[in-house]
Image (cartoon, rainbow, N blue to C red; front, side, top):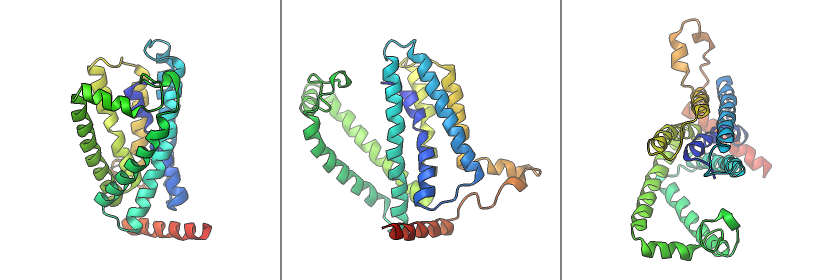
Amino acid sequence: MTSASSFQMLRGAVIIFTGLLSVAFLGRRLAPSQWLGIFITILGLVIVGLADFFSGHRDDSHKLSEVITGDLLIIMAQVIVSVQMVLEEKFVYRHDVHPLRAVGTEGFFGFFILSLLLIPMYFIPVGDFANNPRQVLEDALDAFCQIGHQPLIILALLGNTVSIAFFNFAGISVTKEISATTRMVLDSLRTLVIWVVSMALGWEVFHGLQVLGFLVLLLGAGLYNGLHRPLLLRISCCARFVSADEESSPGERERLLNAGRVQGSDES
């Protein structure tokens, strides 16, 4: 319903929701530069959305209504991802869960739950929204039929499974050693690679607003993650504006997590 580059750029919204949820549920205090980074990220998302809006009038492969719907679905999905990231950070610190165990547990429950959901999805009609012959939400039997006719799909599925496994393990390791928001910032950097490859292969056309939106998103992500601090420290007149407590130390982070745990117990 939208382009791959727009999907990757709009995923930057996860920084906004992860930061807000970290304040609400982990008791974390955001520095002024981090709040500024969140607002700049929102501005970048608006610019990317405008790029999709204007390109929707010229792109015959996607209707404008589909592009808007797809973009809204991406933003809504980032709320769910943010909840996952904050919960992962809270549990890996409180219970000292090994990253491999966390990934394995998530994978087990994800496989079990989605396997059960495939049954009702097989009977839910969605019309043109689906790309399967029966026009239902998910047609598992048709998927196995395609695999039988084209075994190369199995290699693609295995490659996808292996890459996601390493991606999740690396992501949770970053979450445990640094923070969930840093993980999201690093994850957002692959947007550039996907965008360049998509244009190189001719899957997308160049839109100037996307360049501006991407740069604004990078600026917001950089401010949120404190990448401006080393630069300001080198400038004598600006060094005093850099607060020493912009980034929480591991001990401070643990204290905030414990405070969030106590607050959660009180609310229960």
